[in-house]
Length: 199
Image 1 (tube, rainbow, N blue to C red):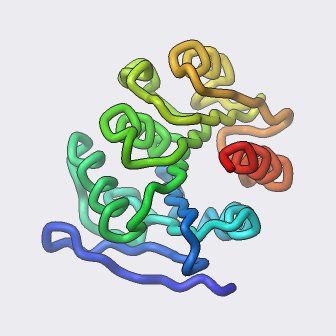
Image 2 (image 1 turned 90 degrees about the vertical axis):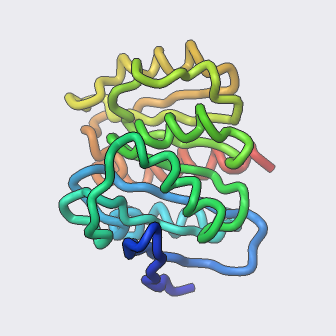
């Protein structure tokens, strides 16, 4: 099934997203890292991975990121409200929320504030983990790191698994910060296995 770009409006600002798969009760919202755009999850095969697991997928262009199709800027404290708007008005369901790097940090923050709004959480090498009250995250959580990540080192996995009761972490050997591009097949296999446990 093909992917289509669409646009939404948030407080008078246009934001872009890429959507694939329709008519399924299972939904996923994917958020890219700072240097990428919503296209990265199509390029890595991760959108297809979710589709094959029976999900409709929304890949969101994050406002304020340099290569994003959502061109407006946003203060950091506003991101959880923006994500909540997308969850309720674009996704329209309790999605599996995935965020990478800086968006992984925002995904953790969102989950700590709005856990009932999501079904599960996947974070890929999230940054600034100590700034989040991880103990407030009460949904199944998967953390993925590359063994060679120098931005958010694999040692951060222990912080996640130690604070979130229903969590698991994995390290992809030989991959760096963008482990989903370095080792896409293994990355997507880990996600598929996690999704299978949710049903």
